[in-house]
Image (cartoon, rainbow, N blue to C red; front, side, top):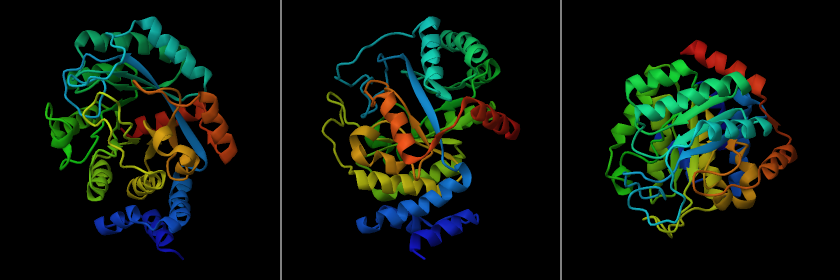
Length: 338
């Protein structure tokens, strides 16, 4: 039995890997990569079988952000050429939901730039969510920035299922990425979402000059936060941002990262998110032996691959898309635990 399968068996028995054991996953010899992914798949299969959750983003407000996050094309210090616009109207949000439904997407993510939402923007989301739920029954995830407790409660009452606020990097690396808010600000928003009954979603961006030890800390911090859904982004360095030109990742290392997050957070939704196309490249399918969720379509200011290619990839793997009906059952289970 390989070292990696021994790790998997321990995790399935409820044990947690030590920091050194977790770090060894990132240092896995390249010629043992398939053995590592096989072990990660045993954990993934135990909790999710061969099902894949599909998510789609609606960029509801672009640019115009006062924050100084070094990776982001929408930040105040970015010189990237992007479309900037204020919060879109209800019809645009509904059209996005219609498209998500056509693609058999279970979770529709309404994302807006900025430090945090105004009460008016909260009401715009609430107004659209009510109709989206009635018409399509989609799971709704909102990502609107730093959230006040009363805003979180308002979103929950309107039918929003999940709230995303990524920690993005380790606490140790945070000040190298942004100084306009603290790491604790991000943690507090995740806790605010949890306290209101919203399912917490929080993830990371890999490839921002962090150490391997930082990556392990990220995975363990999200376990401590008890995030239900963990998007793992891989830096897509955008021209005009402070991280322009940073290119630290290889497809093989990205797979090791996904395996690490599965070992550390065995029961959670691990989503391959932004940057998968440019960083995993031809190895994208292998990522789903550790992860059980992907975004389809475009991201915020960068393009994804064609939705039809994503569906072909899943068919070729022999995996199955989680249906909207299955998603609703899972939401009911999550809400019952809240």
